[in-house]
Length: 161
Image 1 (spheres, rainbow, N blue to C red):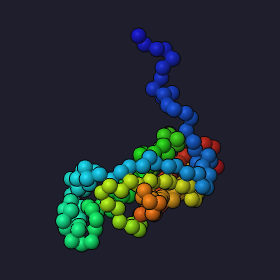
Image 2 (image 1 turned 90 degrees about the horizontal axis):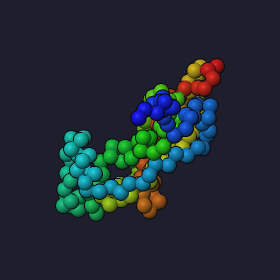
Image 3 (image 1 turned 120 degrees about the vertical axis):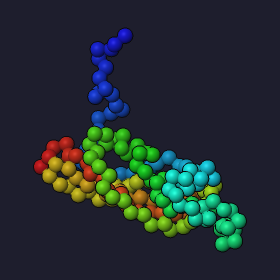
């Protein structure tokens, strides 16, 4: 039976938030994830990065690491906005993911749990759009900052200048 009130265009959690709705300091926390050996193997296969520090525990131990060492990009992708609610909150106002930067501050090993957060740190208005800059932090289970960086997103304005 067809529902005459259903429309794919109206199917969503809520109305999107636009550039004007963003505020410095607004936080978007991404669910935590424990770095498992399975994730290491999947990332190694997907990236083609075959350095032994990512798959050979004895190599790691010989070089002073207690466990397998995570790939840098494997850490960076934990802050993928789609892993949290940001892209769903902005919805159709999102025009694009413009750029990102990352600094890897401490090692991450198999068994560590990571806690990524995006925080609005700058808002740059343009005519019909605006750039939302997010500071990125990723802490481990001990509260140690293991990565920081930034991400820029292009969002539509509700009411162009």
